[in-house]
Length: 91
Image (cartoon, rainbow, N blue to C red; front, side, top):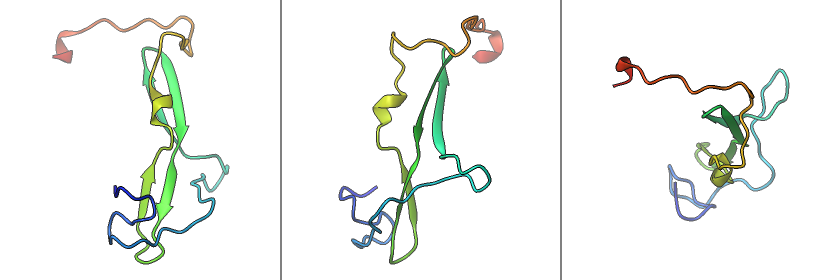
């Protein structure tokens, strides 16, 4: 991705469309999100597009990747969650 948020990462032109552009499911109109599941904790953050007005390229990113980090205060979505045992096939 380019350093400048207004620069297209494909054609290199400063032609990123301005305004509130989002991704939604066409049937339910729900936001498209990146979901991380680890240790029984589920974190998600909306996926954001950048659209080039010149070549039409769509770049996807998340505004707050720090939100996907799991910390000690996070609670599992299933209170009875147990980490599965390590198996020989895991190696």
